[in-house]
Image (cartoon, rainbow, N blue to C red):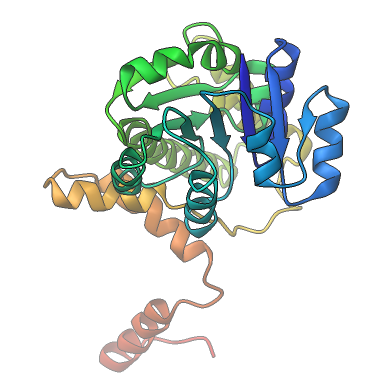
Length: 297
């Protein structure tokens, strides 16, 4: 099958490489010319502009976007849509908020352009293991693109979720669960790191991968990280969030769904990015004021 691909970052480059290996015709564009050359080395067809990318695709065209979420994705969708025609399709594989998918799909429908949202999980390991794809959009359009999804995903690794926005909605919830799982592992391993038993944390993480009810790919990655740096001395405890946890929590608030685990995990990430917490300094000040408790200056 033929597809245009915009965005050749860590995931994008691996995705076009996987597509090319399965003999799809892939036309690529990125703002960084060197990345285009790298993709051409994998057998892709390079384009120096969005217009050239569109011109090198036969109708009906399919263009996959793999660019940062927010304004970059919005700008790219609008720029590509201006070059496409009725019957073409835009696939957004980034981390877009599902409300934006619904809006974009409605706007593009006026021009006869289809819109598919592809929640994509797999990270930098996707080239080797494949990507789990959660797909939203018009079902007939999605099924037309099935050869692309089958190449990118492992066996049984992609599925149709429903109408526009459903793919990114399911991916949002997926990432909320991921936040919570990661926080649980982090807390458990911190407790063991303080044990008087001088435990081998990498060994324990690896052990739990064999028959334990808490085994997972995240735990496997944890074992690998601890083997490389048992005390994690090469890292700072600064944890960013990419947005999906916030969106999931906002959706939970709208629907009156209690999500205390995600809330704690997300707020812990916020705290990790503070060098000094005003709230904690105020706690110390209050304890000093009512009880004369010592404070550290």
